[in-house]
Image (cartoon, rainbow, N blue to C red):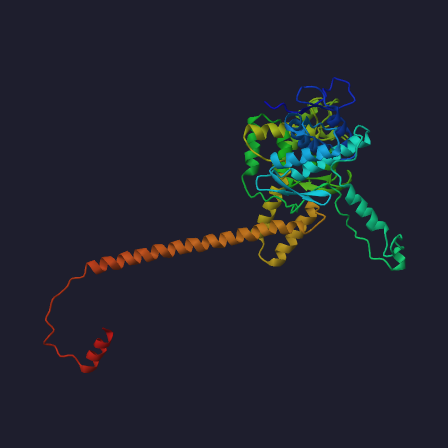
Length: 451
């Protein structure tokens, strides 16, 4: 049986320099991944750091059990060549990818059986070795970086059109402009891997999630967060880290200010939710939250900087603590739903509403622009992927109507055919002798021509 790597948060009553500990398959602390997590949280968000750890755990479990190079088990701190071969094997055997050699790097192509985490896995592993090199725990170059690409990049930025000479200043106007976009330095390069948002059109999805939460006894806190995710289209951290001041700052009691991805905590957008969620929120703040608040404060006496959501210990609720409850509910009800998919569901639902309620193209365009501003998309092209979904939906609807019309016409035809057959069967044949009847010559010629 495979011994899996796992992680645990440090108990609140235990003093430790680590808030999270990774354990190897032998149940011993595995410090390289632990150190990597804590190095990451000083540079990226905790949710992203945790996502990296979750992507890497299966790889390290597999590395301990199955990977060999030149007759010996590969270890995480081996030479870059051994690490690269191990990664290549993992991509092909465990992630169903196709790996092709190209110059000094490898092309990686996902198959239909590959998980959608291949890109994140490679990014996480690249980040892992960056951390360990920075912490002086890995003495070699980063196995996930193509050193030749770095050299070529340096040469393209420094060498000029004159052989053996450095580039002239751009003011001279004698050199080709340097490309603005830097080529990836990754050793494993994903191809045909343009990011696409997921279209989630199940209108009953929120209620399935609410029922899943009810089944595992979600508290009012988890219920409110789930409702806000579906009703606002926000990222989980943008809801979980709301403060009382964020809610008070808006004129409408159905809204709250929040930060956005890349705003570094600055409040740059607002969330809008239902009146029912507002009622649940105020009930939570003045009851469940009040019980866990150190000073037992209700909404009117809380300072603006106070977090809306608290743990049972009275500390600010975190993404990691919330995800435990979310994951438990999804697994209990066998629902495969990443929290971020609630955002895709919201956008899909809002666009469906735009198309269903708008009467003119101008109205559709205006409402789409309002949605783009609300979501705070930096790239307005994003919405075209969702629009493509609705173009397909319109085609499906029109096609279904055509098929229904064809089926109806077929029924009418068969009914008419059966009706004619019955009439024909009911005909009475009367035998008469018409030999004695004289027929006009012109009519006779016409009848002869029909034979």
